[in-house]
Structure formats: structure tokens, C-alpha cells
Length: 231
Image (tube, rainbow, N blue to C red; front, top):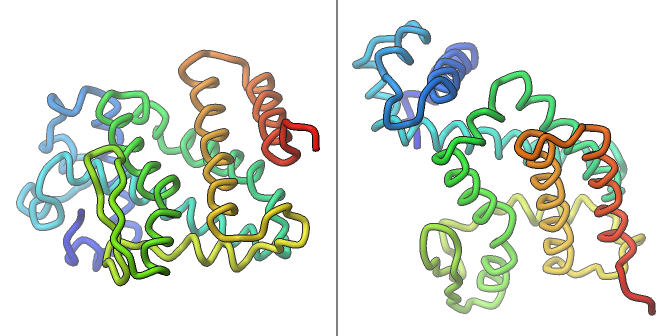
């Protein structure tokens, strides 16, 4: 991940460096990407690059981490504006991710082999594995589970625990949900994230018309919302 020196740069400069890297990673595979081209397009020196990032993989991971942080912030803001109505979030989140990815070239990057690997790990860590972290943190137990990149052990006080899921849960009005526990909430939200990722893949990898992909998204979301089994 970036050094503290990078985070002290202006937002405009950080954006310029990120956009230069995305442009280069979309042009050629990661192994052929040129740091010289990145620094030229970002108007920084090669020496400065290495005071911000250790290598090409480092800035690639930062690009996707930054996207996840934007998604996290959007989710919290949307729930606040919707007065905690969870079902306002999935459709708005899909619109948001489509918009920022189309404007930044992120979709081309996601379709690359390396991009797929990085975003897969981040989705695993940031969206799918969190209930296990929380059950360990709340119980004080140590738990090990498998995710992309290897086994991970979570324990109470683990520095790797990311607390933003608890914020989402606390911002959600659970009165219109069948189950109100945190882990059930997080499973539901993870399913919504998977639905969004699937929709993006249908549009940009399978070539399905956006209108049709959105209809499939809405249909899957309705099943998540209502459930498929009769009571």
C-alpha cells in the first residue's frame, strides 16, 4: 500500500497519479506496464514514484483499495439519506459503481487477469469474510477461515478487522428486515454485492445489453429481498 508521503499529497495530485496508472494498466498487461510512462503521464519523477509505492503491484492494489473505500463511503451516505432503508442501497450502489468505473477506465482494468485477482481478494476480504472477523472479535475466540490469498486468522483485537460493516448495520433500519442480527445482515449485504458484481460482468464481459442486465439485477435482488421459499 502507499506510503504516508503519498497520502500527504494533494487530492488532485493523487488523482493524477492514479489515473496515469490506470491508463497504463489498461494499455498493456501488468508485467509489460511501464513505470516510466506512469510517471511521465503523472508529471512526477521516477524517484518520487518509489517514495510513494514499492512497485507496480503496490499501486495496482491501491487503485482497487481506493475504489472499495469510495464504495464504503457511498454506502454509509446512502443509508443516512434513505433514513436507514436498506433496500434503497443496492440499486443506487450499482448506478454509482457503473458511473465511476465508466469515467475512470476501471472496467478495462477489472477485466485483466491481475485486476480480477486483486478485486477478487478485496471483495473476499472487505465484503464476504467480515462476519467471521466479527464473530471472533465479539467472542474473543480465534477463528481461521479460507479466502483468496490463503488462510486468515481473526481474533479479538485483531488489527486487520475493518469496522465499517458495523457502521452500515447501525445505520440500517431493521424494522423491515426478517432478521435483525448483524451476521444475517452482513450475509444479505454480501449477496447484494455479489449481485452487483455479476451484473457488471454481464454488461462488460458477457456483452449483455445494460437494460437486460439491470432487469436481471432487479430480479435477483427481489429474490434476495423476498426469499425463494414459501413459508
